[in-house]
Image 1: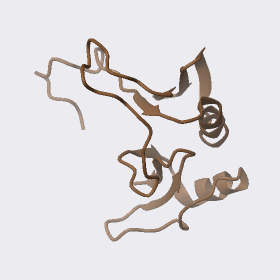
Image 2: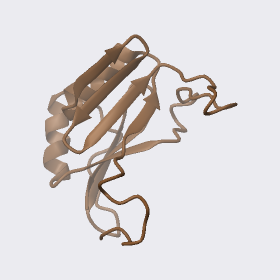
Image 3: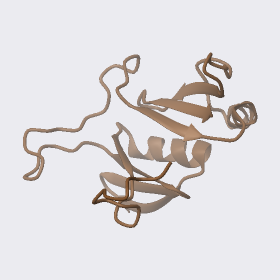
Image 4: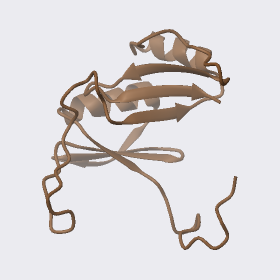
Length: 137
């Protein structure tokens, strides 16, 4: 699927990254580097920038209101059983990825499952409770 020809943000102008707020930068950095192959490209006291082909993940400890986002504080999830973010990693073989990540110590919520609409998926959670979905379309 391609973007509409008339959209002002074409692929040369728009990249996409995700920022999540974590309680322990070092622990979360190790988690994403170990289990998902990210590498740390920026290391600041309250921020880590992690990258891998096609993905950038920012980890921060907190982001209080600022002049350009007044009244908005980013904070880690208050209840790991009710995360508001689902990070989705698309793979070509969920069962093989599940086995490999299990070998690395990643605990999954359940074995790989084939939903009624097709494909395969399985879920885990990161140290702060963010839901991680491994998806095979």
